[in-house]
Image 1: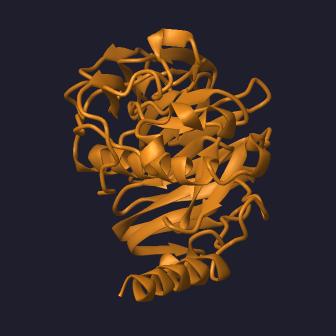
Image 2: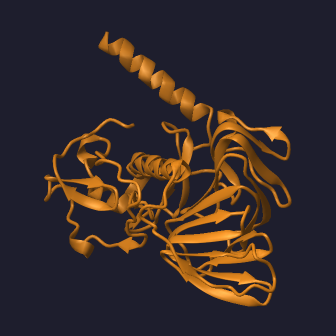
Length: 318
């Protein structure tokens, strides 16, 4: 019976590998589809689970959703997610010049790693937002609104530019002659189903990272997107250290995989999901922030935003 189960599991694993991009090969370019649910299209071509990892948003093409949502990859560590009834056009898919125009609906941008050479811009309603720091950003093409949950961005409208920091928002729907003025918003409570969906997607990407990082031969890797056959999607693997998403989930480099919670049980244990919490979106070294390897601190497990006291073990994926 056990042998039969082993053969079945091995068969499923091999099938996943053979039907997906090769591990560590064919690094996806900005605009690659990483997840889709419901109704979505790229240039009028319907998207499905089989499109993940292969469908790419080329320059001038638009990805749109109806009753569905989609996630595309930008530069390594940066995820762009579209809500229902939304659309985005790829203006420039370069690694050092990445620009997307939101033409309809809403989008969330999760930035777990940003290099000084990266130039990521999101445009909407004549407004251009240049991302300056790791963080979480929301865009609404309906009213030209930009919200910075965490991070920092420059928002330009015609000849005016304003810097937005975490907990501030800006609406430019008033038009060309209106003054740009940032306003505070309650970032811990201004959440909805789209926000929660994005947080869950971030959690899955983190779990996939733990799967992939421990499979890297030699423990060294160039930072980038790596395919996880179990999750059937790409995940971000940093080259060194640990990076945290703005939702608080960790992305571990292969050399630091021993710091992943519950690693020795084969998969991580995640604490209860707490919407509205904003974790650290920056590099954490092995001795930084009081984080110790799991082998010396078995009583800790990971929840959203960091490590918390509690039981230690290998919880099942959600």
